[in-house]
Image (cartoon, rainbow, N blue to C red; front, top):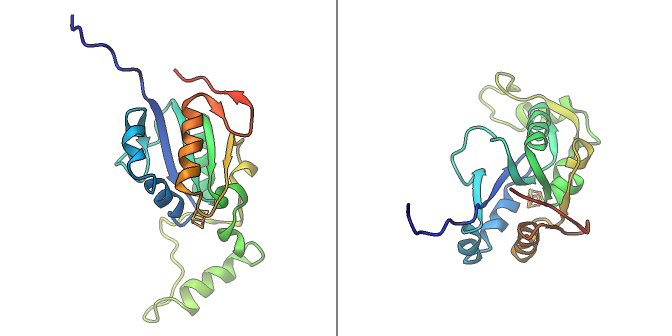
Length: 184
Ligand code: SF4
C-alpha cells in the first residue's frame, strides 16, 4: 500500500455556451494565473475547453452561458439540469436572454430570410434546414426553462466575479441564496 496521501476529490464542473457569443467563456479564461489554483480543485468534465462529446452524469457545477433559443438548446439544458447539482446562469444572456432576445419581437421566418437570403451569400441564397436545430419563437433566459441555482450577471461577468462565484460554490455556498451545497 502506498504512503501517498489521497488527494481530495475535485469538484466536477461543466461549462457550455448555448445562444451566446462565447464572451463569458473568454472572461473565464481572463482569471489568468488564478486558473492554476482552480485546476487543483476542479475537474472540467464537459466544456468547449475540453474534448468531451457527451454531457456526463453527476456534474457538481455547470456554468451555462447563453439563452435558450432552439429546440437543441431546450434538450441540452434539460439534460444538464437532470445531471447537475448546482446550475449557474453564467452571464446576462443566460440570466435575461440579453442580446439574443433582440430577435424576440420579430418573426423567426423573417429573421432567417433576412440572414440567409437577403444579406447572406449571394451565389445560392437559401435557408439551411439539414441538421440545423429549429429556432424557438423567442429566446428564453435559462430560468424560464429549468430551475437555476445561482445567477451570475454581466456581459460578460468580470473575471473577478467569476472567481468569486466559483470560489463560493467550491466552498459549498450559493451566492445570493444563503444556502449550502454539498458535494461528494
Ligand atoms: S452575456 Fe455578453 S459576453 Fe456573455 S454570451 Fe451574452 S453577449 Fe456574449
